[in-house]
Image (cartoon, rainbow, N blue to C red):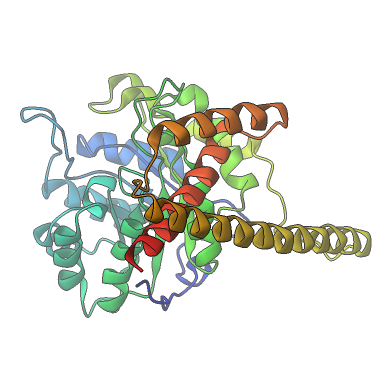
Length: 362
């Protein structure tokens, strides 16, 4: 069971300047001291205060570039000393955490592969206990909200209050233009649950290609996210990892200046009256939806009882597949997305099966 988190908002960490977006930028990987410093100078020149660089890189195949290791932390310390920037890097083990503390890293993030592993998350949480270092947690590789929340809970129980998340999308085999499925709906669920938590989007890993960075960054801002974690390299075409998705500091400046930042709310009287009226309509519709769902579950109980009397199995996959196909087709005519209606109907179906199983057990 998820518990409430004790969180210090990101605006109180002393890292970021307002207005939105708060921005964390730097290369995918620290490659050389010269590359780290040149990129940092380019970002610092237009106001980026938080510098990121990967020191240890979790690669799929051995023999790939797996980061420069602890020597890169010395380069980050130089960035701090010479430019006054806050620095952060990714950790995946207790050793990484201890090395970061030793070299005075200001903030750490936990990657998508690590956040999916409760054993590693607990190891990192234990290593962080008693520290005051801010921690950002990227979403797990697959769209599992409980797994993401569980990672946050482990850190919070270890005393981490400066806690935030980075939404970087989810692995998918579907034919989409991006490297990862944005999966905004899961981010919205987490954002709604923990509205005070610092919430960043990582358009670089979501896109996999710099040509999509602006549209994904704008979407993140439209959804009210606090900031962006963007990969920036002084010479992207020569990057040792993820060259295609990195921007030069100048290009990143142009991207940030191109974003339309919308207010979270408005005190305009006309706006307040209009939005309150629309929300009242939604409240009525939601109440009617609940009544319809209650009626549907009542019918499911009756079906479960009927199946029990006639010794018929609860799950009828052929019937469900045809029903779902029909509903998706009708939803398309009403301009409701297939992804949304499938999620809704699958949730209803799961509850219906649960209710019918209850009847079988009576």
